[in-house]
Length: 544
Image (cartoon, rainbow, N blue to C red; front, side, top):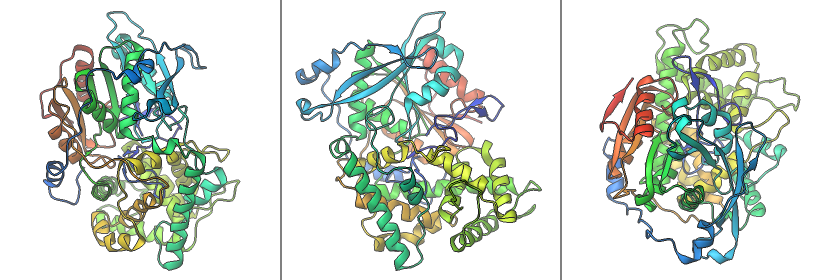
């Protein structure tokens, strides 16, 4: 699952109360773009009953904790002494550490992990390291700590903690998975993701196969070892190398799955963990995608209600219902499907239905982007100028001005397709599920249903399964959920909090993806008290 931010590492724009704001990457990134969306669309309400997640959790096995003692075969990794050096960003230093490529065969080779830190600024007692992860999977934690967390987290937190990030294996600076070059990715992102006939279906399947084959050709060994469980085990090596007895951690979106997995594997070494925009690990891929689809519909309805209050809303005037706003947007998408709009891009790209949909989805992560979306839609719908929506889409895909892409989309698929079996195996299965997805979201359901097919063609088989995470014996863990979160629906936070034996659920009543550092003084005060004094909130605390 994945979250989105327009700059390639993090947004630093005005939040709800005008302060610094960041959007971490969900499923998730939980959603990875309309075409690149994978099994964990990571990333308020969903289409199922309120007991769905609880029922799923009750029927799945729990993640089993690893032995407390460090296996002899891993001693060399835990005993590493990092060589810190400057890394081009003032105040930060970087190092590379090693982890076993395959924990089942530690002698079979290593994977190199990039780590960055900014030491505690003081004054006062140092509380250790605070690892951060912005989600994805595939978001660069190093890019995030250098562009936001290391300079934008509350000063009192940065005063007492070394701010630390490690790019998970296969991501960014840690032996990144790559699949397609820039021009190939341009073609991929413009593929029709809502096929109307057999020819268009074949074209979509070919795009997924080409993407998967590219990943398999570039990283055949690594692709089998980029699971969340392996990344969590890597974090324990990082913890030891940093000299910390316990892991303190703030994870957003998919980062909550990574953090919860760490707690499940190493409950006795879990320190102060904040899981913001939580995922539910007990859900199979199909249910996860369906519930996130409904989450985007909830967010879109909030946008629709806000849009029609403004004179420049191109989707309807005052009093227009969210349903009609959705129908108007869908009609615009269908128009683009037949005739893409000009963008003025130097490379000649036009705004296709797929790119436009991704642009709209990108703006659903943060209500601060709604004005930009209104303006982009106005230009596209009234002036046939698709440049504004293309900007939103490019930001979501992390495409730079020169046509290059970060490895976000590649890592996103690699992790998601390894963590869970595919939601669907064939186009026919997707077609049969279309009514259910379109009921969950009349606007986005069709495209998001087809997007789940990509893992069906992945070159390696999934090694993970849905499971509960209980982390029995862990210290209190703060799980944060936002009621109208598009990418990680609020029910997921409730579900994860119900699984973790020591969870304290903190609810933000509002819009947008994740809550910490996004303008709610109530949320920020609560989390800061936990990080600085170890005081968790009362379970069920609500902020607005």
